[in-house]
Amino acid sequence: MTPVLLYALTGLGLFSLGLYALIVHAHLLRKILALNVMGSGVFLVLGGLARRVPQGAPDPVPQAMVITGIVVAVAATALALVLMLRVRAATGRTVLPDRQSD
Amino acid sequence: MEQTTIALTWGVVLILLPLAGAMLAFLFRRVATLIGIGTAVATSFTAVALARAVIMDGTLHHAVGGWGAPLGIDLRADGLSVLMLLMTAAVGLAISLYAPAYFRDESRKAEQFWPLWLFLWTGLNALFLSADIFNLYVTLELLGLAAVALTALPGRADALTGAMRYLLATLLGSLLYLLGVALLYHGFGSVDIAILAVRVEPSPVVWAALGLMSTGLLLKTALFPLHFWLPPAHASAPAPVSALLSALVVKASFYILLRLWLEIFGTLGEGVDTLFGLLGAVAILWGSLQALRQTRLKLLIAYSTVAQLGYLFLAFPLAVTAGATAWSAVAYLALSHALAKAAMFLAAGNLLRFGGHDRIADLDRVVQRLPLTTGAFALAGVSIMGLPPSGGFIGKWLLLETALAQGRWGLAAVMILGGLLAAGYIFKVLGHAFTEAPETHEPIEVPASMEWAALLLAMGAVLLGFLAVPALSLIGIGDPFGASEVMP
Image (tube, rainbow over all chains, first blue to last red; front, side, top):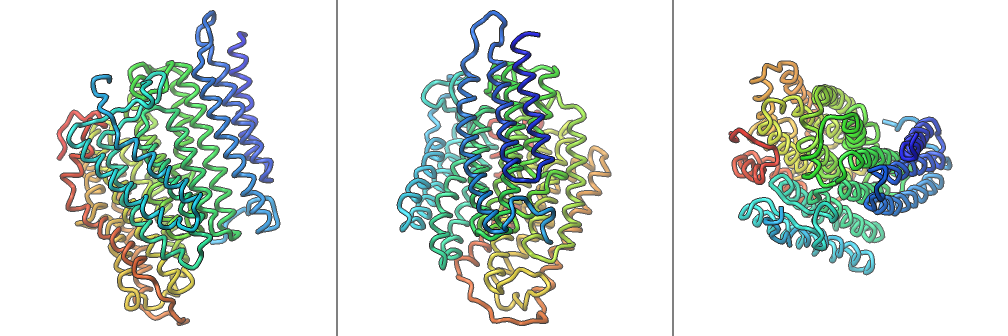
């Protein structure tokens, strides 16, 4: 197993793990963390696959994309956390209601 | 590409102008409304100027910072982008006319609305002008975050939970899309759509990317069965925000899917087109039936959006043999749905203001007391149902004609049934508008600008039926659909 494949598979593993957690956990903080784990998985795939030719130098473009992605993830997480606190203040609970009342 | 680097100046202005407006509106809160309206008018003029330039010179390219693909970021404007930009400008202008009166008594809400709406507009314009898949990811996120913040604006429990659900769905969609970008970049060494279109070839990497990116974008476009987040978010947001979300934001992710399909995946996704068509057909029937069941006006309109989005996906199986006609029909449907649905949500906002509720059964003789608003709702309904001479009619007629020509009776039947169901839920509302409600109430006066904004949008949706020839030739500029046949 080459290191490149190892990184890529670890990334995909993190992504799947995060997706599983996002679906099964009801608590909003866990859902937000799950999304962050998924994001880390994608970044690992991006960074890991940057070495496109086994002996060549790594490609810098995916690194730039990862940095942009991290900025976006930080902003999204901040918004999600603020929203979670507001949901808690308004409903007294940190989970989403099962079905919206029609 | 180098010989066509006519500076896409208007396009750059189109992104920078609302961005600057948003930041100024955030800094100078007292005059946020003034800044907002000024920016909206200037941005709309810029969109028209860009459309003129594209009509004169054809597709425009611009390399940001002079770098150019494959290293830099490219902007591109062809007929399809210009149509989407004009749609954004038309709906955006009407909403900017509507919002000051809507937020008149809530100055804090107005101060929060304008920067977020202008950020949303920035994201939309940047998205429609982007020519690389990573830049599209960034614009999708800009758009998603601004849209979620706008949904949460009322601060009530239902709006906050709706916004939270929306945020989780939109972030998941973006991550699926980004993983697809990573795979495509690894496989073919570029994120530029034009370069990828040349390099891409059938391989497991492409199929995985197609699956991930389509799922992410379908989630954001709310195609059945991934529509669960749309009705609560769109129904609990303030009226101008609901209009923005239903008219523009869901169209943005559909636009990306369409672009990827046309240029990268179209020839590789055999079988996927049938799946999209099937989901679209189910979305039409399911969304319409749900709309018919609703007792609240805004939820009814939100489910109608789920149904109408289904029509856009019927074109995927039809386009296999009749590409240009089916895609033009879809672009036309997207445009007329944007105008009509924005008009409907604004009209619903007026009724909500007027009666203090949006229970359909308790609409009390609004046809005599709010004739302009009821007229706007009815005219928008004409386009949603697909009756002539509206824009919705042209789009649905083109789709129906293609389906019949190909002998796809099932799809044709779904289109007609969807139209009948739409008539059902629109007349349900109009019926209650004419009659006296069991409980009468003191009406609250609705400002004229709110009524006129809704009516102008609805009239636009109907007038589109008369503009078919120029609009269809505009879509064809730069040959976005790879058309080999001549437009009707």
